[in-house]
Image (tube, rainbow, N blue to C red; front, side, top):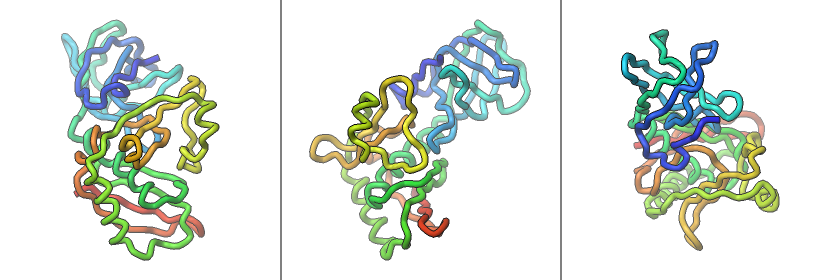
Length: 238
């Protein structure tokens, strides 16, 4: 099991870690990591590992067996040995853009209150697929509503509930095709806003900004038809 340092502090850019395994495919597993592993539509982090007599670029991170995170080198290079202590540095500019986009997509699901059938996050743009038979009549109005919501200066936080508590509140799950990971006995929720000012609360394991003001202005791009009941809505950071 890899200790996920980014879960407690998504703003942590660097940290030490000890190599616990090098996989047969050439991946590196650490005892703890700041690298987010690809999941939930959010791509894995890139960055570097350095140690006493070496360094390697990391292209991405993926989930491995037994709740581990596997760091994938960008190209063949000298590998650290099991037991080595390395310094991890993520590509922070890319990570922060992913955090901004991920939080913005949560708010997009607020201004378009329909079931979400898919989604994807990138540093330059993101998208959500909605169970939406007809395209929105006023895309400009939706964009204005979304930017007003972002400008409300809302704090973003996380909390944990039990699986049974989530089962009693199925409305929290907005995604139709992807269900929150189960098995640990608890589910992580991401909350935008507090108290009566809460704009959104839903299960999510990704990284987010601490306040909506960090998102900045966004632009709704193309809205594509993807099947009889599906519309894909693209979102861009400005």
